[in-house]
Length: 57
Image (tube, rainbow, N blue to C red):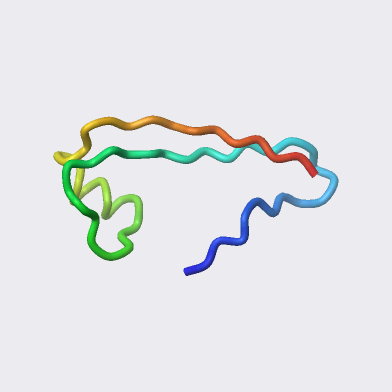
């Protein structure tokens, strides 16, 4: 999997990107989807926070 960064449509102004960050008491195996991650690791979450990124073009 590769990440290419924000790519909003040209001329659409500001775009907000939301990222959830989790502190866990165990390692994550593989690359689960968000739903799989939460189903599997919900009991291992110590803390969580949301980061909002703003991108303008």
